[in-house]
Length: 416
Image (tube, rainbow, N blue to C red; front, top):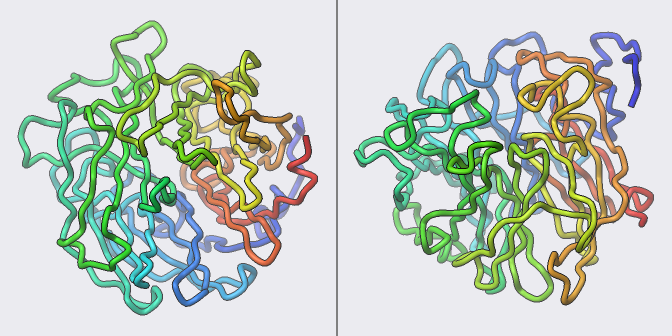
């Protein structure tokens, strides 16, 4: 980690993390300054689409979804509007979109839809909106909202939407069905509010499975199963407040034995994980993630920490390898402790209690602690995605929730 940031011109600041690809470099336009939740996926026609949430600044009330396109993952188009707030508008937001590509060829994008009724806040309280495309993502058709099963943590008035977000690309479960995790924050009518700050909001990790989406139905004909079966979800106690749960942003991967493996962010200073033997219907009680059974706990501030299964059967964990204390910053200082980003290669260990063991972490990306962008953050690789294409493995990452970039993961990053 550098003690002093290198000097780069304003025009070259996007090069600080040494990316291989630039997808989007914001210009002088306050409407497009904040760029995050960056999901790159392949279209039915073979192009690559990059989907993200864009705004003037996170939490300002003008979130919208955009998509850029590439043939080769190297040259990218300018982003095109998909859904959400229009220029100069507040409200009508579309936030935290995630894609599902059906076998039939229809592309769906689901998102947290702002309907003007707020509970926790304006960008996480919302219905489950949907747009879809039948022309490889060239145009998008608004669909009906997707009904969401409610539980004890929702507002008792069904007219108040749930407070939730999903952020990762779904994966296929052991039976080939698309499944993804999501965070639910408890309604203020159920839990009066965070005792300390935004990071102490009562929350838990749950899951949704799309049972018939490969048939390409219209949104109002989709069948969605809400998991786990008990409606409680995965919980991790907040420090010194065990009655309060802070378990968020679950990341799923499939194990060779058909089980689901899930990691999530918490406020304990560590990544936590759980395992399901029945495609998410029930889950083992969460535990801190270690490098191996009986090994060291893996440090993490309250930041996304995705795990990806590679085509060759290995795994990659992307995380920040600190417990929230970095330099002068404390765990609550999330604008400044989500760096550097590390990679740790993992392998499945048959018969182990923790089914994936991880090698030595390697620092992959950093901002040198220099804060920029409308949020004034120095974070990196929060809400990224990963692809494998033509022998290239690429991590697609937001740099300070401003630049959208890609960096190749070569074999040297996966040694050990």
